[in-house]
Image (cartoon, rainbow, N blue to C red; front, side, top):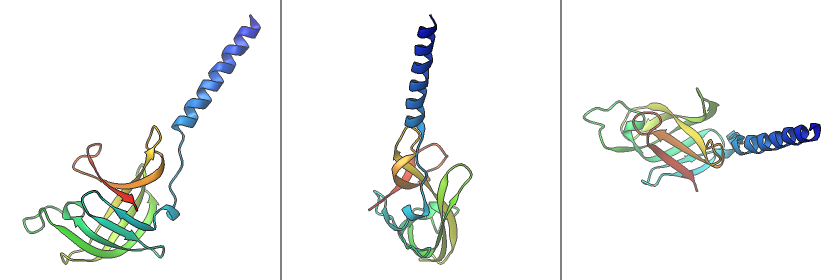
Length: 143
């Protein structure tokens, strides 16, 4: 009887260890950010190792309040980026110093993984929520 209990305990430990491995992930690092990131809709960010970036064809809805003059257009720009821990996820904060719409803005690009139960295993992608959080994502993949 005691032997049977030991086997059950071992089975539970083995199952728990597999579950933890499946759920456990990696953390993105600052070294994962530099490079060219593109969206399926033609937007792109090029992050340099020195903390600067260039951006092309970024939807104004990401960084500006909708106004008649900025609706449904895209902008280009340059600025500085910072890798940091956000409220719940890792993110790349982009701070535009100069844009083609003559305004500046700052917003976070959240980081998630394409693998893992909790989207927590590389390859990484960057994204902005479209509308409400938890809905559709506007994603950028590293090239």
